[in-house]
Image (cartoon, rainbow, N blue to C red; front, side):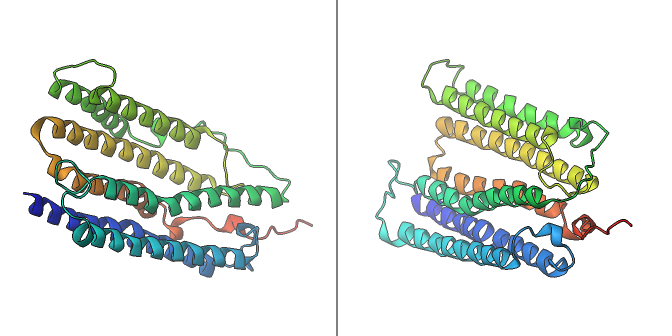
Length: 293
């Protein structure tokens, strides 16, 4: 059983390496380069508050970091398969879930840095914005204008279903420190954070001072759906964790956690990339203002 489960983990962990540290970085870099080539600073100066070399250097840094993390994944896989004796840091004799967990967090670090750099970029755009004309959207932003009640209802249903399933398989044990209570607290806390983040996207001020109203609406929709998809995936994962406590599925722990990271990446980064295509955006708002005489 251990050999079969470990081989399954090796296969799934390879998917984690390639999907998060090769495929998506390649897509994001291609997107950055496409924007820089198609919409250069000479024609779209409002898009680049800093010298163009700054953005090229950032792209090179992002590429190198992901290449290092990509190779690190194979080092970890080699250590698990050939260096560490069985049991591999797990009491039950199977691959420890610590391997995909720690590596997954490392994989998402460049994306976190990219997100913060984007905030800094928009802040710099507002700082150098010399336009005296301010545009405001008159229509109120309502949640169901951007996501369907079905998707929201499914996310709530899976959240409640995950908690009830956990309580059911553990015979409704309400004891502080029990795995069920801990998972419920983590799941609830994470969903509260996702809801707050979604509310910020929905009602917060526009980060990009030049962004067209239509593009912002698409961005809000993509971000809200992505957050709901992540919530659903987490609820399903916690169900499998609860089932593990009852039906002795320890041999799948590492594989399921690695698969969970891939699903999260696919539903968050992948969904945004599929929905917000560069060719569909309005870049004319970044062109130089024509002086009125």
